[in-house]
Length: 110
Image (cartoon, rainbow, N blue to C red; front, top):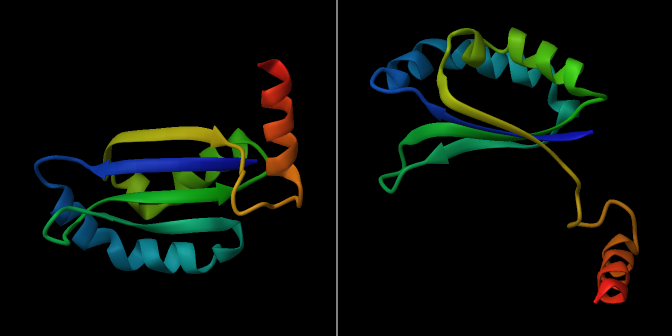
């Protein structure tokens, strides 16, 4: 299952929490790269980190909850708010022909 995690650094001390826990967070994710489809910092207009965006491939929500319970950023309470959604990949196509089949189904509904 694919999950999108979208977290903004809490105010007013998120930058300090991120600074204190960044090395531990990077060590944590570097040992789990196989579950990442995407991961990176959210930046403001000045290029400063203000949050994180991750797309993780995990077997179920329980596995995601275990991951979040161990991540130094979430353990430190960095994100406020933290949004989590399950997603289905359309592009790039994980299964060749998926997008064309989706389009055909939608056109049949019309």
